[in-house]
Image 1: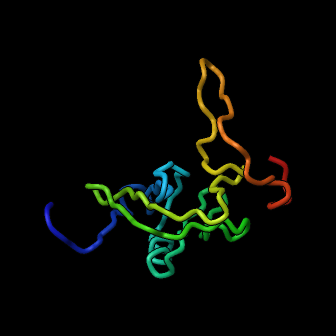
Image 2: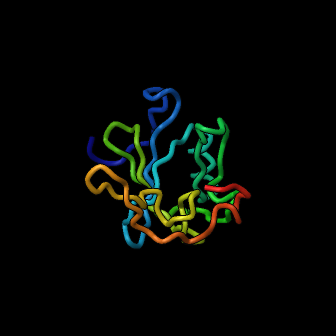
Image 3: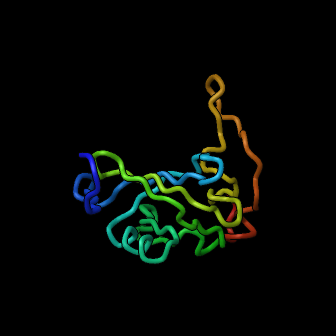
Length: 132
């Protein structure tokens, strides 16, 4: 469809959620993949801070609420099927990953092993009180 039209995300296609790719707005580095339900989407639009639906905790999640590593919205892109988002963000605190790395994609496949290819920005035990 060409031209402008109202935002009508398709939350029904994937069980009430849409996948969201968070990308650093300055470097275009992919930081993480998460999901939003309608409430997280509306809060993100209203506040300018990215909110997600945590599938593991089964609850709404304001990115950075525990760590302080919030994501400020700079741009939102919607795919052609209205069921996937790319959100370009200012990553406050320099770490998007709960394991303390800038990106959740800090490992690279080499042969049949995963090699860490990133620098840990914070220790999760210090931030969350748990060992990762």
